[in-house]
Image (spheres, rainbow, N blue to C red):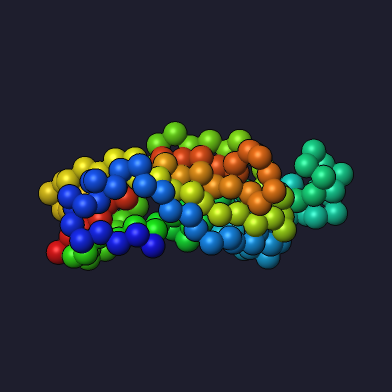
Length: 150
């Protein structure tokens, strides 16, 4: 994790990247996400039927990749004096490649912009979620966080 002593130091780090640890996308995680979102499409939750489908097996929900942003990308950067970080939103989200169940994913996060605001600082990260052994990313998004400073 990159740690910055001030907003000015964070602003100077635009372009800096961090890479997360790998996370395995197993069937249990996919099933739990399906239960949480009520999205039980067979390509996600029926491994036997999914073997005959277009991906040759079950795949993770695209939104599961996004739901993992807090684990993969958020928290990769910290500013001293930060009270909390909150999700401010996403821009330009794409899912270039499905994530086969059993795959490992990780995120590359680049600081794209830093904007001081009344509550603290708004940080935009360019996040690419990589699938181990696959050329195309699982997801690409601009993730925006508000770091509230005390």
